[in-house]
Amino acid sequence: MFPGGGPSGDFYRADATRHGGSVLELGCGTGRKLIPIASGGQHCVGLDLSADMLTEARRKADERGVAVEWIQGDMRSFDLGRTFDYVFVAANSLLHLHEAEDLVSCFRSVRRHMAPGARFVFDVFNPSVRMLAEADGARRTRESLSFIDPERGSVSVDVAETYDAPAQVTRGTWYLSTAGEPDFVVAPLDIRSIFPQELPLLLSLGGLELVERFGDWSGGPFADDVALQLCVCE
Image 1: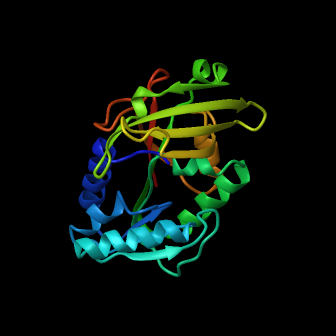
Image 2: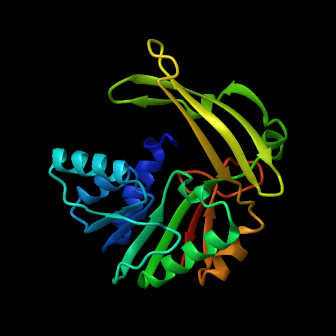
């Protein structure tokens, strides 16, 4: 449900290729980020909770003649019996874990699967206090989330949401539309906010260290007013 590709896909492909070795993506979905990495020859494993997503990922990989190992599993706790040189979670997928305990459990599982010298990279949005305060349930167009679908063309995204402050969870409904097919997807989506101040602590509880945090896909510095937290951990 988080449109991706573009600069984010370019970043993960380049970063994984530069780091080398085996690759694990958690919350891989339909393989939009992982299949291009695997096409370069790296051994890739994708883990996702959704059997339907993995079925589509297999279809897309087979169609392109790309070898990827797809595994159904829960990123909160998994044991694949091996380690990887590069682990990543893209497109805000970590934010489906609402409880701090689930995030820490995920980080601990990641730590157990990291080979010596491995890196763990993920992106989450940087919460905007203004946007959270404006989450009043009204439906609004999010221009920044619009994207191009290979089959449907230009897709616009509307979101109606409210913010549960004690839980740090935004509860909403997403509406995906094209000019000829309004609301072709209407889906609930509840996502957690991870504030910049709490992120290093959550990672440390999981046995990881945040070594770099960028504010854009070109490696620009992280700042309070940027929309992205692009994190590199060891």
